[in-house]
Length: 235
Image 1 (cartoon, rainbow, N blue to C red):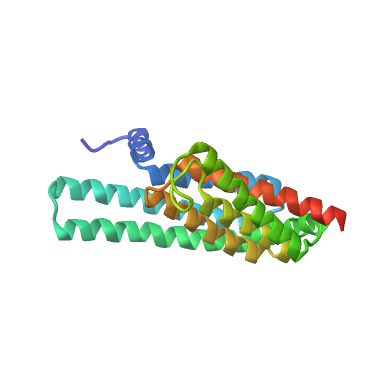
Image 2: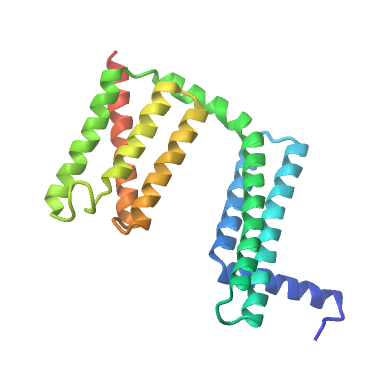
């Protein structure tokens, strides 16, 4: 029955949001991203206009995800079995969420970058710029350590499988080296995006688990960071 009181309508709306959060993984991820953005706002000097733009962007993404969930439920009721138009309807609804998320990401980047990037540059400026030899030593050390891990575990092959993802380790070692060498946030973000794609491909191909990819990322980042810091301090 359609609610007649305002409080009943609000309760129904809240129940709908809770259902979406419980049943939709992407909805939970969107809420988590919203919490992270709000946390960043607390520590950064965000103007009122910037805060309003962030709130509108986040709200639009959550709104799009709720509409997407509602459309999926309606399609499932009307077409329980497979139908090409049912698939198209779900794909279009998912596309609306993707567009909203891209817009929110661009908005968040334009607003937050000017507050975060200066601190990023200052931090790496204090560490200094590593030499080419230091970079090569760091990446080769990561490769050797990964090979040792694979040899000790006796699992997988040098290029596939194993207890540690060598692709993820090298990819994140390169991210760390590029961040040190360029001290440029844009270059760091672009190489990080490539590293994440490489790591994600290892999971989707079934060659590594999330744990193995995370171990590789940590090894690549930490070992490269330590070696480059030592070499820079000894210059």
